[in-house]
Length: 64
Image (cartoon, rainbow, N blue to C red; front, side):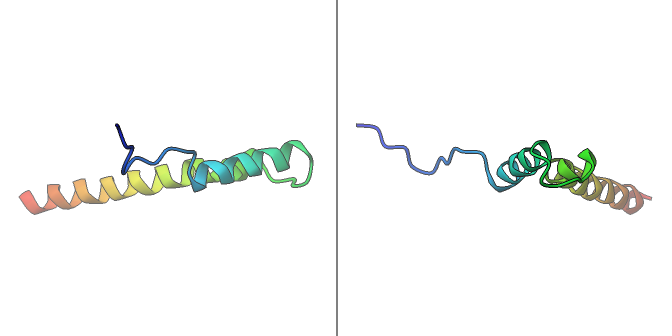
C-alpha cells in the first residue's frame, strides 16, 4: 500500500489570486490595468531576481 505523504499539489495562493483577478477583470468588476491584474505572478519573480542580484553583488564585492 502506498501513502502519499508530504507532497502537496494544487495551485497555491498566488495562482488562485491571479485567477480571481483575471476573472474579475474579464467580468468588468475591476478596471485595473493588466499589469496590476497579473501582479501576483510577476512581483514574486522580481523579488527573487533582486535577491539574487544583491547576493551576486555581495559575492563580487567580497572577492575584491
